[in-house]
Image 1: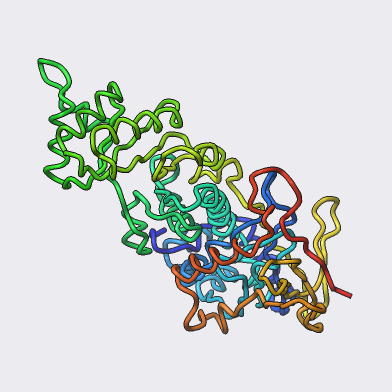
Image 2: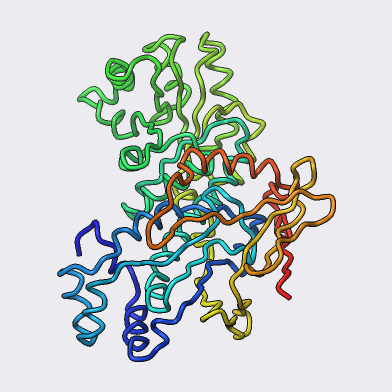
Length: 434
């Protein structure tokens, strides 16, 4: 499989279902599949939709060429193999735009196509949306905890190399300022940042021992005085002193990567001020998550660097979304298994808000039903057209649009919804499916 082809980024049972369906009329029946989450991850009050743009990009590469056929013909009959050679998704997709908030039951994505065409996309769609939405949801909590202070995503070394790129993109939607990942910068235009690690400072060790000043001088020579110097390789107090002696009081920033960050930030701020470096900023990193960021809110920290917790969803590495068949030839169908129930029929959703902009509820209703209009509340449709006849629609929201949309959406949440404490979803979901 070539790296640019996504047809085998799937589970085998998707293809064996198609093989069985093609022997019967069901393969060609018009169906509706929906992506939704039955519940939010434990402790979460809202979710953030991310990955929709990547789904559309990967859909265009979902093709069965010779390499892919060589794999699937090992277990599929010739007629199914021939069908896959010609596979092109020709249906319609609607969904929540990237950067939209979602809650339990939100119809995040609606796929309309024949059974065979649509069922084949389940794994690809879920793998992207579950990962990217989990990362964006965690990153949004971190951004909220940080307030006006920027966050740099630096988790590439803590996850799969391709997941690192997707994580950087999702984190940027959530409001993270920059990433260390250069492929995310190239592919998606995410701002990049980075200076030096402890290895650089340790490399300036000679027969007479470590030479931290030489390391700092070399970095400044290459990157300028506005760079960020990592001051905790050895003794942090001496590291700060060395940094200002080499760079002068105009040094851009110092970074602390270990220890009690709150205590150290206060000590370093006082030391920098005493040395006349009153404008030198303090960057902290080292196993930070939203709770650690919140605990540092009162400390003199200017920027946060977040790695492992961000790219692993900070305890919730998947959004828990599912892809379920809800309608066949206009007839509602629903799964009834305990704790895994689904609601039959194609659905749409609106979000109701007070005149102040604060969200009151999300209303899910039958797609062929009457659009709800609660008294005294403004409503907004949540799904937008994404694909028509197999082709992405024009003028879809950009990554920058998604980032701005989420920032506005977070402001519209009830204030308690931004808290890090456990509780019910910040916005209730009401169903009008009668």
